[in-house]
Image: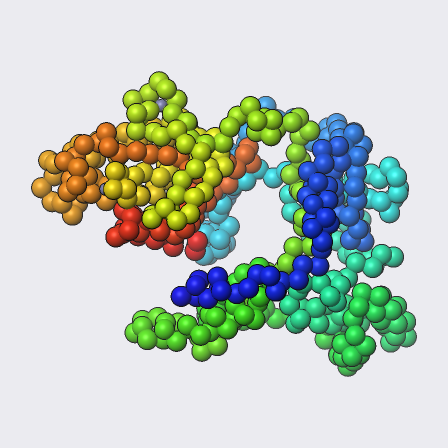
Length: 467
Ligand SMILES: [Zn+2]
Ligand SMILES: [Zn+2]
C-alpha cells in the first residue's frame, strides 16, 4: 500500500538543481579515460589528475621496497586464518569476550586497494600523492604512533554544503553548528574564537546561509564552555525503535506522510504492535554530491572494456555443448508474472556462469526465481532431476515448488522447464560476500517480478539477506 502511495507522488514536482546538459557532462567526465579524479589530500577540493602523472607517482611509490613488496600469491585466506587463530586464543584466555570475538571476525574479507590523494598543498602542478589503503587513513606521527584520523586545517576554498542544495533542512542547519563548535574547541582563547567566527560567518554567507541560522549557531558555540567540548562524548544510546532509512530526496515529507498513513495497520498485529513506533523515525542518508559522483577509489585500468566495444553481448546464451542447453533459453530480456513489465538482461550469462539469479518457467507460464553460486547448468540439471523424481515421492509436501507444480500439471516432464539467467553478481578480484549480495538480488527479483505463489512459484520472500 505504501508502495502504491509512493508511485502516486508526482515526480515532475522535483526540481533538479542541475540542468540536463550539466548531468550529461558529469556523466562524460566520470567516464573519461585519461584522467583520475580524486579529492585533494587537504581542503576538500576535487583534483583532476592526468592519468600518466597518477600512474608515474604510484609506480614511484610502489618501487620503494622498504614499504612495499610484490606478492607471488593472494594472502587473503591465510591472513583470515591467522586473525582467527589470534582471536580464538584471546577469547580462550579471556582477553576478549565472545561478542568481541564475533565482532572482530571477518567471514568475507575483501582485498583493499591502494590509491593516492594529491597533495596539492605541497606542489600545485606536480603533487606528490598520499597513499591510502581503501578507506582507512593511517599516518605515523612524529613520535612514531599510528594515527587514524588526520587533523585537516581549514583552507582557503569554501566547500561547505550550499544552503540551497538538496539536503534535509535539519542537516543543513547542522553544518554551521558543527563548524562553530569546532572552532570553539580548537581556539584556546576567546579572542581567537571571535576572529575565526568572523571568517566563518563570511564564508557561510557566501554559501547562502541566513543571518538567523548563523547567529544561532554562533551563540550556541560561544555559550558552550570549551572544556566541555574537549571531553570525549558519551556514546549515543541507541533506542530499539524501527527506522526508515533511505537516500534523501525532494519527496521526503510526502514519503513520510504515506508511510505514517499506513503505519496503524501494523499496530493491529498482536506481535508487531510492540515494535512499531507511534511516530515514524526517518533517517536520511547523505545525498550524493559532486565528489561522490566523480571520485572512484578503485583504480580502473585504461584498457578499453570488451563489453563497451560490443564484442560480448548482454543476455542469456546456451553454450551449445552441455546437457542443460535444451532447457536454457537464448534471450536478452524477461517479464514479470502477467507480462506487464519487461526487463533487459544486463550481463553475459551462459550455462557455465556462476553467481547467477535465474528465471525458471513452465508453459502456464508460472515463474520461479532462484539463485546459484555454482554453474547455472548444474543447478538446471538438479531442477530436472527433482521434476523426474517427483512421481516417486510419497509425501507431496516434501517436494520443492517447481517439482510439485510439474507433478500436478505436466506429468513430471522436465523438458517443459525453461530457464534464463537474468542477473549476476560480479565483485571482481577484491572479493566480498557474494552469497549475501546474490540472495539480496534474488529477493529483489522475486519482489519486482511478482513471482510469489499463487501468481508464481516462489514460496517465500527472503528478508534475511538484508539484515
Ligand atoms: Zn550449455
Ligand atoms: Zn505451469
